[in-house]
Length: 379
Image (cartoon, rainbow, N blue to C red; front, side, top):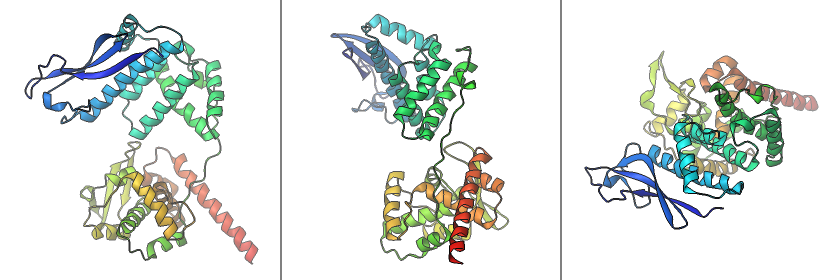
């Protein structure tokens, strides 16, 4: 690869104070020559850290993400030149930067990278989108808008099949790429959308695990002396009786609850999708809240899932407990098994479409069929 280095530089002329701002720039070095590229970010002297990151600023996270993306963009440009055996020059860099700013670039990869940064989505969705962008660069046949055609989409499908272990993962690779192809088509950057002629195979859906009533009771009644494990159990049960995903649990605030018809209710939007959800806080949920004086002892998702493995083993539950299992348990064992209509469950869970909720009905029916088979063998 061309031996190019990029680093962030703040206040190059040493003029910044706590009352006077100075610019953050990118210093691009190649063959002992330097070029400074503006980022559009200006800070006071106490807003830049020794770790070369923005601090003490209300937009710190946004600015640091923008700076990271800008540096990555230059490195990606250098990589693209190298992969095509084109030598790096500052003139080529200048053209790349000018095209990026004016939006006249023919690069679909640059367009996709820019839209990933601009789109208001969750961090997990952004990570998946960046993963697909990286895969596209490895694929190598879709770089510019002119490369988006039926033939290359089929070739990308074969590439994804070799890369992924199951068809559902291949489907997700297409699902993400399809979003940006559709945006390019809507913006008249491409004349045709090849996905209109390409049928996506979802693959076999992985069965969603949930706890049966017996397993849930075992979990609730098990004597646990360890304080941390006890708290994790309460968090898990809280989700079992509300249907909240971990991301929504993490920001739960009882102050948002409204008393209606003798019950506290929460109406909010899901962190993952922004879709509204509507839940009531049942007695078991209120008991957990009272135990912690209405402030849940939330821990990181990683630690939470680690403790759930220990909790499952301790309670002799064979199924692997995860934060998703609690949500699935609410949908099936708590709601569906007790006669709640699928349309209502969809509103409770904040699903974007009824098809997602109907998966739980299929899972629950499979469990019913299995139990009938077991009874048939007994009687």
